[in-house]
Amino acid sequence: MTRPAPILIAFIRQAMESGLRYFLPGALIEAHDDGSETKPEIAWCAPEADNDFLAFVWMGLRYRFSRTGGFTEDDRRFISGIGRVLSIRYRVGMDAALTAQSAHLFRGLAEDRYVSAYLDPSGYRDPEKAFHSPDRITNVIEVFRLSAMTTYENRRISTGVILFGSQPDACHALPALPDGALRYSSDLTSTRTFHRLADGLNSLAVIDRNGLMVELIGIAEWAEPFRDMELPAPVADRYALHCRATLCGGHLCLILTPNGEIKAFANGTQVLTFRDGRWRLGSAAECFPLLTALIGREGLAHRLFSVALNMAEERRGALFVVLRDVDKLGELVAGADTLRASGEDQSQQSKRRFHYLLRGQNILQMAQPVLETVARIDGAIVVDCDANLLAFGAILQNSIARSQDATEGSRTAAAISSSYYGPVLKVSEDGMVALYSDGQCLWEI
Image (tube, rainbow, N blue to C red; front, side, top):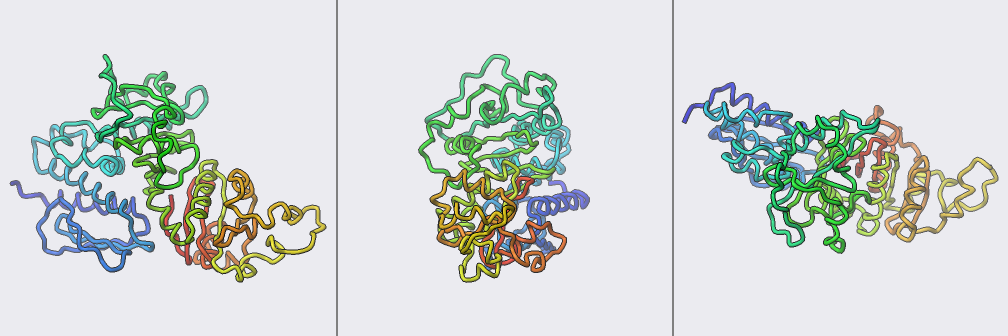
């Protein structure tokens, strides 16, 4: 076997570190030579007692990284995906004949390749398949990237696909390969009609295992057989059908929204988002259990998570605080602003005049649209662990002073400070939802 050139090893190692820093922001990464053989396959080290740490050996280096809040199984899967992509590229660099035949493996952005290997590991598990087969997920992402920069009749383009899976699905079957079936690739974007074939929200194009566009489907009809199946985690209402469409068969769903976001759904949940120029790893199925554990009541966690996701899709900011100790409400919210305050406020400008409408309410009994509307009022929603509404539109006391970072925005500062009193969900107007506890951000999706 050809001895690897030092420059190739250095390039591959640098690519690994860049990928880790891109997809695991905030993680502290350490790498040192442990004297092991230079192999491009990741070998995971035994789990450490503290879940905040992960370690693996790769290309003769031992990587150890840590992050507040720890790591999920999805994080491990994504790291493995990065390793598979770089392993293939390493093999190409070691074989001159393969280098000439495999230029397509270096096309596009590296992070898109990592996303593909995470969503469908089979594409990079077999070197021969990777060398000679097009990467259909990367092709879809490239189409979406180009479409996001285009308008049709002065409107931003939205579109979407179902990538047909390889697992058994008794409810769906691929049609016979149509004559003239086109490969779903960037070449299609030159035809304006293409942008109206599937809108991503109600209709999708079906892509077979070879990357060919073979059918157009309605998402409601596709998801109908799974309407009674429980989703693994709450989801924004407008994407419930997209999640259900991926519950069986190993199908993947990718959509481009009018906001220019790319969303990826797999196994009944949203797992990835491309927003503000970067991919963000965050599976609702991984994040929701942590919220539930912190709150201690699944029904309350489900309601707050659902509302937060819906508001994020509408680009509405909000803050939800679950107070652990009701006796400390006065430390967080001015007494007159709580729903427990007695007496009438005579000021015609005060929102306290409307407290009677929500006093004594439990948010699990409220209609969800009402809660979403009330949450849009400037300030925070504060509830106790039994879901009783304690305050709405509340300006949290001393939130800026207690923030660990004075450069944070006011909503983030309030989230950090109030998280010492209980779990906090922060919804940003840029579409992000984050969980805070004890002054730390535990996840962001």
